[in-house]
Image (cartoon, rainbow, N blue to C red; front, side, top):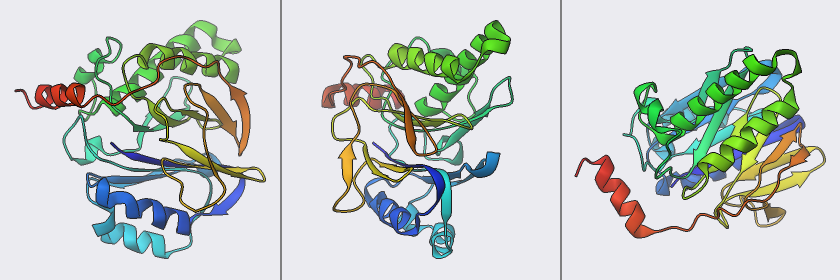
Length: 257
């Protein structure tokens, strides 16, 4: 599949070493890499549909000092969608309130009535882009209905409802940022870990150091702000179990066979 990396902290953290370790995994995830820096109200996204280990741009980027309080990174092993820029994570979209959302996804949507219409609206062809478009549409719908009362609690409610709609039968490991809050979810065992220190939390699909990493709770939404956990959702029962036959059928469908 893919691998995810994220930072939520109350202060800037030097992540050069962590990113070098993370991107070294690209030999197993050869179809693209991406970085999103989310500091001080700005979103800056850098990405290529290429093997991270062979990217001259990324090599030079990592030679400079990188400090951030909010960041996402992704390395892609494509399942749905061609290997091209428009299918490379992170994805970003702006809602009706002017809030910019950023998403990285590790997983596969095998089927979803909710996401199917977005194949005609999206720029690329990945299921991950469809997830973000659907999220922003649902956020807009609730924002227009609630108006003045649409606060972070409403955003969390909407995101949790979306996860419960999308997760049955699908793998939905995501990091999502709304300009203030980090939303984290995984539903496959052993596929997302965290390292916590004083007001900082680092997320990674695989631990990046020998010590200090713990697996995040399974099958529930977690919400962080500035390195602190502010919400833990109810646990659902939709654990993803890899099925090679189901994956094979998806590949054949995507290939038009």
